[in-house]
Image (cartoon, rainbow, N blue to C red; front, side, top):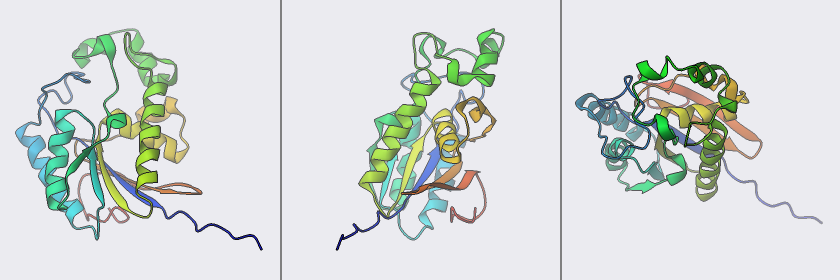
Length: 214
């Protein structure tokens, strides 16, 4: 008789975008060091922490290396009585030469149309392509899922990273990922199962903490 191995239990990943910063909506900070949450962003992080703390159990809290994600993750980890672990693969996209540029300036570039309509074919000058960013984020997420079978974890990251992961989970082509909105400190929940991911919440900023109901 052939013995079947026990099925791998699904892992629930609660993705949280970092809170608002002084540059949110005005420039493309990318991986510029020293960017911290604004007062509004810190309040957003506390609200997200209170919502997530209502969940039955959170096994781990991860954050990208940037200050703004670690500062967002800190109150979440405190509320769950955990420490913040680093997830380098969930770091912000490397925007290369565009890092720090004003969005108003970038929108006037000819390449901006490609960024919005054909991101799968775009590479930031001196930086990453969107495809590389998505592949990196997927690899990091799969590693976290493999480390936490049957558990719920929190991963604090960045808008484009979370949008790319939602696109993958829903079977949406990367060229359409700009249609997904991920607001500061919003909660997005994906259940990773052996037969494919299940998206239960996207861009939730209010309502019940339960990701299946928010």
